[in-house]
Image 1 (tube, rainbow, N blue to C red):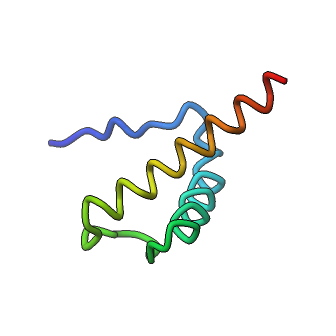
Image 2: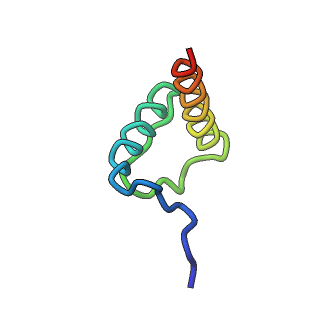
Length: 65
């Protein structure tokens, strides 16, 4: 049995995170679908995740000011 390590600290944030992921995908030109996206290349998936991390770091830095 496989266990997911993708547990959210705040489960109610799931929808906001999904919107954030879709927005990041659009920004880097990756066509994400709702649900399964196993047909993405590693490069496409990495660019979405990398863009999300970049935006989270920028938001954190803005909050420090």
